[in-house]
Length: 173
Image (cartoon, rainbow, N blue to C red; front, side, top):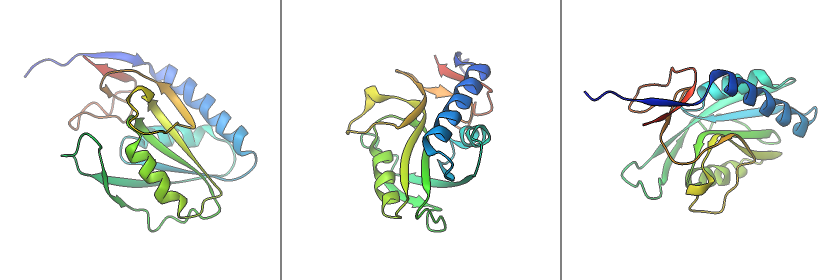
């Protein structure tokens, strides 16, 4: 087995600082209103937990899972959304959390589906934002970090079921 090298892109301290700033910004933008964080499994688990703790006031959360056709790598077409039927977001300020926003296809699909549930507001929050890879017109409302090329691991991001437990975000080399 070939040795894998991971170059640290963002330290645990940098992540914590950025998440704290993001939480403060989201709270400022939402005012005193309640906030509902909706994380896309499973890459957002660490991000959601830390962001939730960084937002003062009323914050609820939930997770959805997107089952996609992995054979269709060009569009990464979303095939099915799990766990969404039980989530009532009508009239709520919803922040959709995604680990890596790249092409924008899945995020656009999710935002369209979620709008049909009549939230008071709906925002896209990226842990890692890759606007250079967009194939459709989409902008993240919030992003912790903007990154360029590479495969990233750590802080909940995994590759082949490994590296999610790293306390930092690293770029595979």
